[in-house]
Image (cartoon, rainbow, N blue to C red; front, side):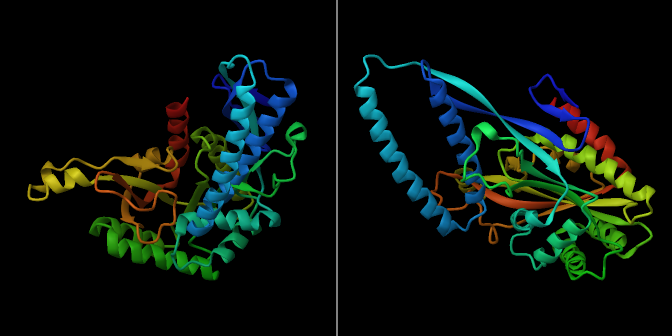
Length: 357
């Protein structure tokens, strides 16, 4: 049974349907039903291609963009010719279509989709992402992948891949899974990053949690592609909490004392301002603007026991990289590592729910 919320999102009573995302597409009045349907289908295909393009290397993305630009130019020319033949220009209106996303247990066909999402988080870190993906799928009684609903009869198209994974929310035990190479690598990565970037107090705390197996540590993974709204995080996280409780009731190793969450964010650097204030005291320099890839993670940061961050500018292959002019405010990619007590997870989810409602 599904319950419709006031914000046009659908939240579940069961774990199979998590959220609806509303897409708004400009169309013209007096357009036939067939044309509307065709436009909606094209938009849905474009959404899928967008996510696949974001996961591709820069050179491949450039080729794809050039190809799309050529197609766009051809379409624009054809559209212009058609409009010239019309007696009047039709006013634009906005049509809303609903794209149904489902939360499902991670399965073998999701392997490459999950691995792609992990790659955008860890970038060039020395982590066996294939092994980590296998581990996530093997413990699929905890965690969910976000996929497009299979019930898309009216918008069915060969270009829509049913195996596309748009998000992954799960938790990995970093304390008891030390026999897995990927877990050993994650533990070593966290030690190294804390040594290099954390304050002494934060470094000491993180080392203590990593070395003290009596206080189990869980790596919370909350990854999705951009443009999927933060509202979807609430049912995903609530479902994760419920699954962790069920796993604990069955004496499975998910009784955590702490969680670690690695967040993606970007900071703006005003190059003009930096030059003007080059010889002034640092206290007078304004704080850079922070843009969170997953907005709900800002609330996690507010509740963190300790945290530290570091730039991944030299590792990033995101769409925000490129050639910048002197007047541009550059977006520098960062990672922020948060450590928080496990008993804060549910209050954090409640706070997120209030914030985005």
